[in-house]
Image (cartoon, rainbow, N blue to C red; front, side, top):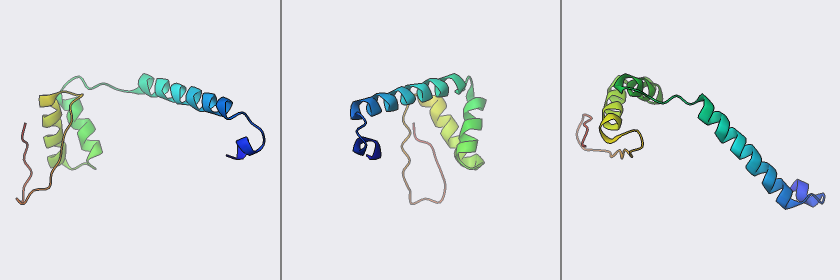
Length: 86
């Protein structure tokens, strides 16, 4: 809003933001690593779960079953253990 206040064209600001967004997405796609096997999925899940091996195992098994583009829904249960339903 400060730039608009000083007579900067808001459409040019929008174009600049979109250009930066596209560059960031391009960079992230370049450095991204695609998992090739179940061990890669496990390692990613392990880091994402703060090194909780039980949760990492469940998440990597679920992703392996449903595919990398699948959606995992997590629900709180009344039991005292974790389980996987596919």
